[in-house]
Length: 157
Image (cartoon, rainbow, N blue to C red; front, top):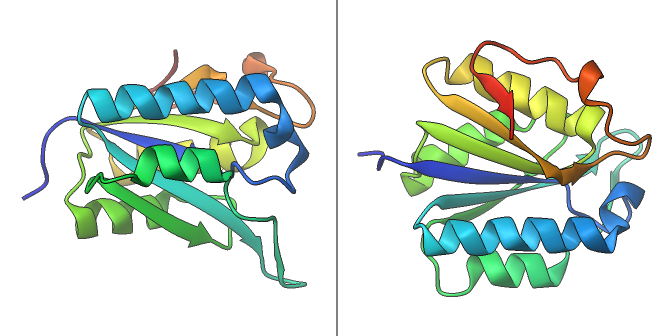
């Protein structure tokens, strides 16, 4: 039985992705994790791995993983090899019985992996609300929210 509530999705907070290096971003994502834990939300961390040529972009910042994972059973971590991490989020939610009524998404890169993951979540969970945490997202070209496609169940908060 999937529990009701919210699942926080953290996208590609890996040191070899330059947009993740901003201290303000790491702090904002950490704050989202602390809110998730205090509100008893699910937490899924995604890590991007390039397929051809095979390449990792480093492990998610350890302080973020520690904050999310430390003695918390509603946590899952998944690797993805495509920009859209929604399938991996769906797998994690099913395995850990995490909430799927509402997702909060943050991390990098806004106009690549975040956009594709948000679109995928909106399509996989059409009755869910997908919230993009604007102040906890970054992109190597900057956040241009006018270029961020909003499907009917997606909003930037």
